[in-house]
Amino acid sequence: MKKKKEILEWLQEGKFLTALMAVQLFSVMNLSKVISSLRKDGYNIKVVYAKTIDGQRYGKYYMDFNNN
Image: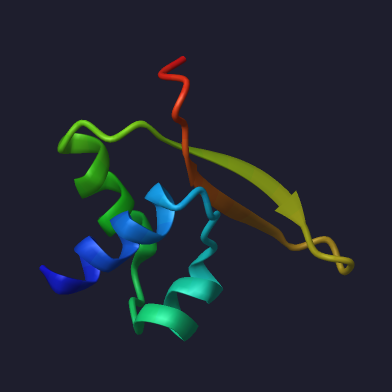
């Protein structure tokens, strides 16, 4: 899957990714499915949650290089 590889490379560069960014950058509509697949492949991907100014919650995915 080309999109999965592109997202993996993005995260391996130390960048975070949100669902909106995934749509804009990679045309991926279901980021959580790709993240789940990467986790099953053994990658340590974490999520932190943030809120927009109007209170909507969203996740920011990133690769944890510390393996904690």
